[in-house]
Length: 407
Image (cartoon, rainbow, N blue to C red):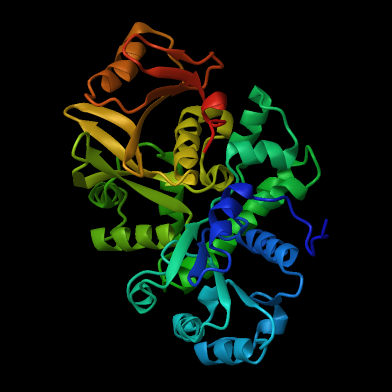
């Protein structure tokens, strides 16, 4: 068995999505939040290529490394790669943190058109290929969103059994992969690392890239979102709230700063949609964090006092990590926590800390019972109850089992 050149724990969920495209004439783009593990998935892909073809010519560029600091423009990128292409071996090009190269899409398009290499790119931006970038490379790429560790991966990285304590640990520190290399039991080190990651994201991917000027407001906005996970949100509401605090922030500024946080992959905006036709409502959405640990760094309450919000955020992460498109559902006066869509199928999920009285049971189950289709419907709780199916077909299960469902 061939030895790997890097020490890492495989991320087979994402590797499995990219692997079928190895060698195909299409640009592979891996995007996601900083430090979410994109680089190591590139390493895993390189090791797979070497295993199949030991003679493969692999060209690797990481713009964060000093040896590649001269690669700053599309022309420099093209010249660097072109000068290293082989004429008698298969060429594979890997470019990490590609968003740091000005007009990178021009060089990538030229390399793609010449058909001399198989191209893989990674970048720290949710909208790495949007607007003119997407137009320039239209039809030439496939994009894979890479997330921090889900709960199933978290157990594997930390070599843990699926237990209440493992779940609490996941809720406390989240899924940034590097944390698994820290000494066991030293969660204060995890918090320091997460603070540094957050500051790096804010500085490099928000303040500088988006030309943000009101730093204090950006920080307050991120903290507000951390404290209001699962609450309906609108830019108008927060602007009005700030006016009562004698802070004058225009609605458009709120919208711009929210978009900047989204692009950096710190948060996700989840729109409301009508059950049935999935008509999207323009007002009232919810925000969730890409990583529970980063959320906890910003939140006022300690995780133990915010289990309901963390539970809801964890369920949302489970859905997007499995490539579902997620909406907040609205069915008349009823709200469905999540409608998840993928490949023409749907999944409905209600999230409740516990089902401990008849009123809660009627609300959580009743909201789902009114939906006329036959797609799966779940009520997910923090309690470790065995999965059960109601007479109306609703599946009730504890979150530890729900987060372990197969992709």
